[in-house]
Length: 125
Image (cartoon, rainbow, N blue to C red; front, side, top):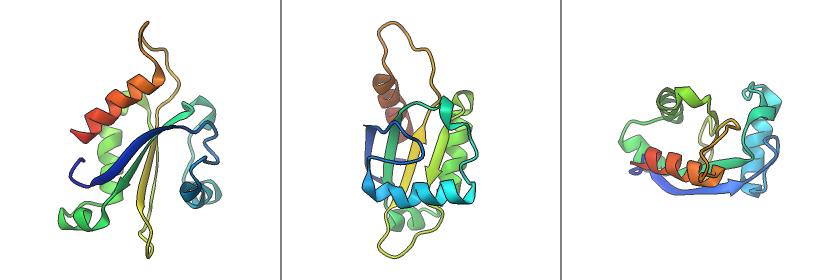
């Protein structure tokens, strides 16, 4: 995915219904209002990996947000990841994909941000 991602970052964004990232609130409102987000939000991590994607590069590679969503769900099927993504590109809108994992027990020296960084690196390579 590194060929189409312009930025990626890990945020502590504890409420899955809202966001500390003002630019994402419209996207979250859409998911909450339309029922696209039908998962159990009580089980997700308060941490989110946020990707911004380049629409022009995606079109040049014949990629869609739906295809990327499907591939990520296949690749991380063992984790029951929660993905919220742009459905359609509106004028002057960034393509955003937000990924959360469920709360899980981690190794002795591992924290959720460290684990998410490993997930992020895996997605980017």
